[in-house]
Amino acid sequence: MVRSGLRIAIVVGVLGLATTVTAAPPWETLLPFKRVDADPNAAYRLTKENGPWLILAASFSGEHAEQQARELVQELRTGMNLSAYTHRQTYDFTQPVPGIGYDPEGNPKQMRYRTAARYDAVAVLVGDFPSVEDPNLDKTLEKLKYARPACLDLRRRGQSSQRFSGLRELYRTVSTDPEKRKRGPMGAAFATRNPLLPAEYFVSGGLDQFVVDMNKDLQYSLLKCKGKYSVRVATFRGQGTMNLKKMATMEVTDELDKAAEKAHALTLALRKQNVEAYEFHDRHESIVTIGSFETVGTPRPDGKTEINPTVLQIMQAYGAERTSLPGVGGQLALQPRKMNGISFDAQPLPVETPRTSIGAAYSEGNRQLRF
Image: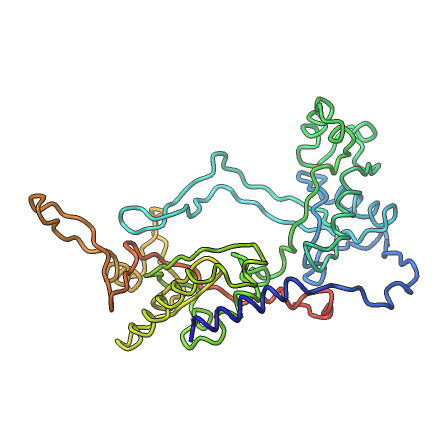
């Protein structure tokens, strides 16, 4: 039964959250202090093996960007014993980007940046952190925010290719916050992921093992959908919680169970009609989708998207239908469609297919995994 399966998954997930303890290998405390390599002739460019999480210490643009980035890398390696790397990237804000939602014709909304610009930048990143929750990441980030490398000292070199360096220094000097006034030229440093790793590594949306366990054994799980997209035709919401005690005692799972049962029943009913239906459950809701697609549509010369005809057909076939309201002079209203007494969404929409996180394998316990 879906009900019992989800209930077990929730309890197992809670117990896992409550009992998991990450302990450092005992031999780590016996290792001598290790210096990072700091060859002045080496480039130290970022690779897939550096990470997966890093700290963006500074970025440079302009004629001398590469030179000043390498100077900072060298100083961080020699002066602070940090694994620092450079990474060049092009930023293009001149092209339209997809917005949120769809226009009346069913095309994804198109938006443009307020300030259109295109430029190359060279970033200096510090690694290598296996997790964004690594305590060493926080410690290193704090050090970088208050560090004052000689190569970033505006008073010494007069000019700098570091982006917004002058503006940041102005904000720092006029700030009324004493902590911000103490920060150095890398005071805006922040944690970021390795841009060279595939997007699937980090799994947009945060699909984790707990959710995977809720779905992996279902016959028609959305995790088994091979396409990048599917069309969500039904949504059933429950009552989620982050209270581990309540989850462990199963005091709030009834609504989620009901949502899961409806999604499961609707999926089976659609499959009996030879419809490619899938179900998916998380901590807050259960959904039913139809179809498997590599793309939602094709870009047109006018910037809009020609929606995939099959996707549009599904949206129209399972979306709400117009019906006359009795007693109000034939006025039309939208009425959600039903199957076996279970309602579909009024407006089906394309959704990305969730994927199992391959990032979970990259942890303290498995540092040998690389891409």
